[in-house]
Image 1 (cartoon, rainbow over the protein chains, first blue to last red):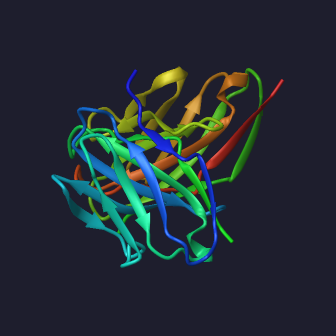
Image 2: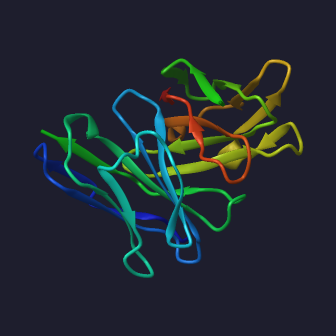
Length: 113
Length: 113
């Protein structure tokens, strides 16, 4: 069964460093999403992406964040200069259409020291 | 804005007992409602969804949920818990097909032999 994959599963970085989280969505899906979950808090929406551009973003998704679909398979989330409060589990999701179910990856646990 | 409240961050049941995980939502318009499950080291997997058809929704692994508009609830139930049901369960809402999912904090279900 097709699934969303994410790499790495865990990443530790120093404050101020750039990180890139990678996702491979399900191959025929057109809509892509990033969510995050800070430990003990809710899963929160970050950004949605369709047709090579951001379709919606939350207040969390400030200028430090960017997304890209560099090729036909990967979907990346870049954090330009990490802060301690960026430590969280980051989930990628994809869907075949706007009304369709979002399928989630296993997440990347990011720890900023 | 819509929101979700999951009552109980941790629920523990005996094997074979009824599972009841509570979810209440707030939405200004008729919502779409979802239950996702996360097994250890895996992504969020859709259990079931309500999209304004039948109010009693059946999902995978014997789970079901009932949409009760008067109570703004969408509680998840399973008649008989199995050890393999131990996981984190997330309730989520969105108001239309092209809006992000809004999640609850999650409920960790433990099943005792």
